[in-house]
Structures are given as structure tokens and as C-alpha cells.
Length: 409
Image (tube, rainbow, N blue to C red; front, side, top):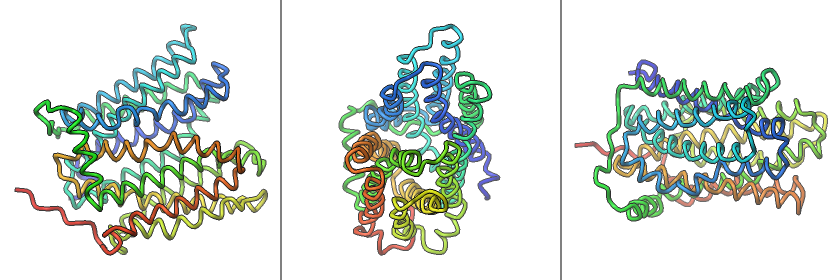
């Protein structure tokens, strides 16, 4: 059966699309609220960016144990309602004359906690919703939505902020999370808790860590993803610095050039299924990295005029390869992991691969100050390419297809 005829997947896709769009809108709107409504300092803006990632470090590991004890659809609906309520408090506080930077930071922190719970449940819900042979197709469709949101969300956020004011534009994010909650509530299938007994938390966290690090395939994919994310986070603050300070690009051009990455990701999501079928679902993981990541080494050579193509084209190709890799590695994790370990595996992997983002951002800023944006980008691009060594040194290098799913009793 086609996934588009699968009622539960359609509702999940609508929910994820709305949620992702709201998330990418927030990446523009929340800093604009801080800058325009509260006249935030650069330090306060940096704190607002960082605090939204803190949750992955604080509850990333226990979230897997908690979600094991809950109904997954209920967790996602609750997380959406909480995020909508938190964001709604911003315009309400502004209209009441009570909005402060502390309020905004608290909202950012709590949004991060709700997002961690949503993500762990969401990643574990898809394998229970669709058949194993449909995981690759399902993840490709979900990644398509994410890539579209990555392009359209920031542009919509900036446009709405200009039209309605940044504070009022937060209402769009509230609506997105409400749509997600409603769509999820319409899914008839529910995933009952795996862990019915309230076993001690630390042994369960340890079991998740032990599974990820003792399974050679899971360890290789996780370490590869964490290394790549660290280097991607190092590059992220340096991209804007180079475009604005060194290439002297106007704001609209910076937005257009950065959008090339989102377009590349969209192209990757749309072609991931065909490429995986031709090259092999396991082989595409390392091929995507070794063929696309070298283009990142061209970005530090960018210049003004036509030289900006040395930024736009590599940025497109780099994100194209990233999404090919992501679709394959997420499908692999969902297919390889036993159901009773799914939420703890996802929580452990998210803790490791997202927990490095704040560190990467700080390293990128320090490296840019010390050696310059171009040198920092060269280091980050080299690291993204070398991240493939984790997979190349594993049994995945000799495999064409992902491991077969064992038959269930």
C-alpha cells in the first residue's frame, strides 16, 4: 500500500510539516522579538540561541526512559500543546506590558525541553506506524517537509515580522503547533508503553548507551553523525560572518545565499529513494559524504560578484549530501534497533549528535576570532569530510543494503 493511502502516516506527515515550519519560523522570529521589542544585546541574543539547545544535554538521556513509559502519540500531542501555550505567552505578555528578556529566555528553555520529548517520541513512532519496507520512503517524505520548511520558514518569519511585527508573528508559530496537535490526535494507532515496570532510571539509560556503543553499526553511524554535526555547528556562525563582513553582501543576498542550502536539502530528500535504490541503502551513507563534502572546501574561496557562486553551489551540494545521508541513517537506526530499545536508542543518539551543537557554535566563534572566518570554514569543511571515516572503518563500508529486519513471532 502506498504511504499516501496510509491514513496514519498522512496525519503524521501533516503534523511534522506544521511542526517543522513553526520551528524554522521561530529561528527568525524569536531573535527578532528580542532585538526589536526588547533591544537585546548581542550577548543576550547569543544566550537565546544557546538556551534552546541546552535541553538535549540536560534531559536528552532520561527522555528515552520517560518516553518508554508513556504512549507515544500522547507525548507528541502534549508537547505540541505545551509549545503552543509557551509561545502564546509572548504576545500576551507584550500586550500586557510585561514581556522581559528573562521571560523570553525561559520560553526558549522550556521549548527545548518540549521539543526533546516530541523528537524522541516522533522518531520511535514512525517504525510502529508503517511497515519496515516503507521506512526509507517515509523518512524521505518527512525530510522533504523539513527541507521545504528550512527554506520557507525563515523567509516567512522575516516577512511576517515585517508585516505584523515580530511579537505578533509569534502567533503563526502557535497556529503551527496547534495544527500539529490536532493532526496527531486524529491518528487512530497508538503505541503503548514498552516499559510497564518502573525500573530504576540509571540502568535503563546505561542500557541505551551500551546498545549504541557496543553495536558496531550503530556506533559508527552515531559517531559519524556527531562528528559531522560538531563541524557543521562550527561552520554555522562563520557563514554569516564571511558573507556580511568579508563579502559585504546585503541582508537580502545573505538570505538568498543561505537558502541555497535548504534547496539542496529539498533536492536530496526528493531524490534519496531513487539514489538509495540504485546505489544501495547502506552504501549511500558513506558515498553521500565522500562525494559531496569535498565541495565545502571551496566555500572559503568565495568572493564578491560572481565569486559568490563558490559559496552558493558548494552550500547546495553539501546540504544535498547531508540529507541523503540523514534519510539513510535514520532509516537504518529505525530498522536495526529492536522495538524495546527504540526510544532509549533515539534519546541516546539525539543526546550525542545534538548535544555537540552548543560546543560547535562556541568553537566556531572562537576559531573565527582567532584565525578568521575563512580559515575556520576550511577547518569545519575538512571535519565534515573526515566524519565519513567512522562509517568507512565499519562493516557498513562493504554492505550494499541495510540489514534485513528479523521476523517477528
